[in-house]
Amino acid sequence: MKAMIFAAGRGERMRPLTDTCPKPLLTVRGRPLIVWQIQNLVKAGITDIVINHSHLGHMIEEALGDGSKFGARIQYSHEPEPLETAGGIAKALHLLGDEPFVAVSGDIYCPYFDYRQVLDVLHDKDIFGHEHAKDKRDIAWLYLTPNPWHNPNGDFALKMYTLSNTGEPKWNFAGIGVYRPEMFEDITPGEHAKFAPLMRKFIDQGLVGGEIYDGEWVNVGTERQLEELNAPLGAKSA
Image (cartoon, rainbow, N blue to C red; front, side):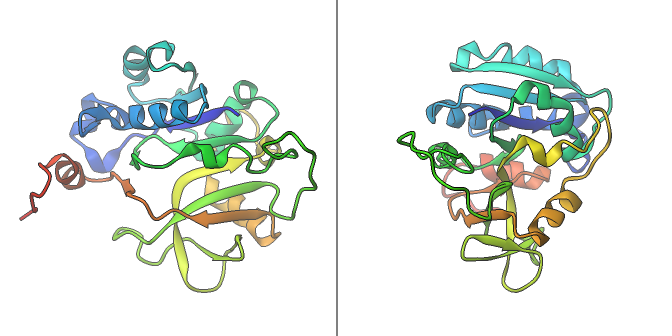
């Protein structure tokens, strides 16, 4: 399985820090946010990684190189201007191949997420190599979290591992998912395309599964959050 890490965002809410540093390179507890993801992917045996970038993208390439220092093989998909999430995936499909791939936001902090759990999601064979029939959740699989302060109403409902756009309670999309490439085949490479409308269309068709992740997870969106994550253990913010 290959992975894609999204790193093309401008990080407007994190300015002025992101005026001179791409948001995924901001450091949390001793290492850049994006490096936490790379190392966790490699631990799971997912070593072929595609990273898209735009704003200050050269700094990302300089910091990460070809990935060999992490035990990975990194390829880059440069976007002259950010194409949104679905557009970024469509532009990078030629690097991701024909099999399901895992994709993750480069600015979330979830140090204990175990990527081994994604390896047989959506595949036509189980972990022993045996063929098995696909169920109706066969286009995407999303990981959800309890709703954070910045998204109190959540994104999607979940019942029997199938996502719904309606119903309660709703859960927060964690920015981690597994996707089949054909989900993005109608998007022209280089086209701007948002993720949410595309995903909601497939959810309405009953084609998206998911599960809850309740480990440590932070969408690092403000300088205050960054400071709190880097505060000494046991310290309380004022």
